[in-house]
Amino acid sequence: MTKIYYFFIFAVVALIIGLFAYNVVTYFYNVQKSDNLAIPVVKLYNETGGRSSAVHIGRGYFLTVSHAFSDDQEVLGLETNKGDSISADVIWNSKSYDIALLHSELYQNVKIDYYEIDCSRLKVGDKLSFIGNPTHVDFAKSWGRVSTEKTQDVNIWRSVLVVNGSIIPGMSGGAAIDDRNRLRGINVGLLTHQTGNSMMGPIRTFTNFSYIVPSDDICFLIGRS
Image 1 (spheres, one colour):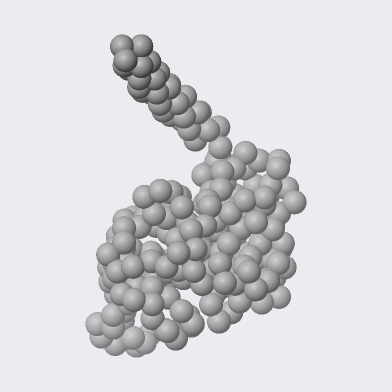
Image 2: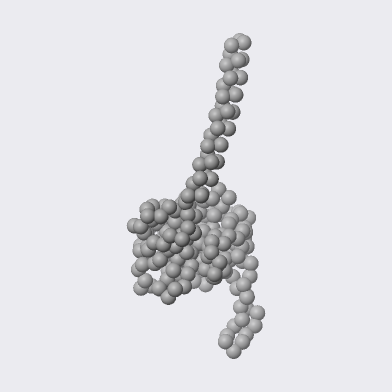
């Protein structure tokens, strides 16, 4: 009985030490990985010089928004937060969902991380971070929560979720990620409010509500292609 007791104690201590060592190794591996790799969100440049964002989902495939480029544009320029530039081909473009898939054979020439996609449906109240390149600011992040159930046929979007986070021009095509660092949606736009009129037309202001295409719709589009 005494031998079994001591063996049990030894096994528990060994397990605790093993878990501690695993966590330490994993921590330093992730720190080194994040230092060496560019983040999955990149800047996207269209033919007129305007910029939006795109998200690397692995093996040189990038997701972005359809409205970031013209229908006849087949090659787009991408730039990582490390300053490396590559070109990417448009594989498909779903105008109704405002989502496009790109691919670059040159992705192996740059050290870039990727997001795994979580295809489960988001719920009201879920926390998210939104990453993109607003106006002249590079790789900015904002935070918020899912504000509504899935909304159909809003403006140019067939299916979107409303979130209470800022997604301003330039962040379109960027990533909506959860606290596990998994991709849960693509940023597509913001909700504006008309406050008046001028000789140039309606005066609109930004609100703190924005739109994302959720990951379950994105997984549907990828699976259909």
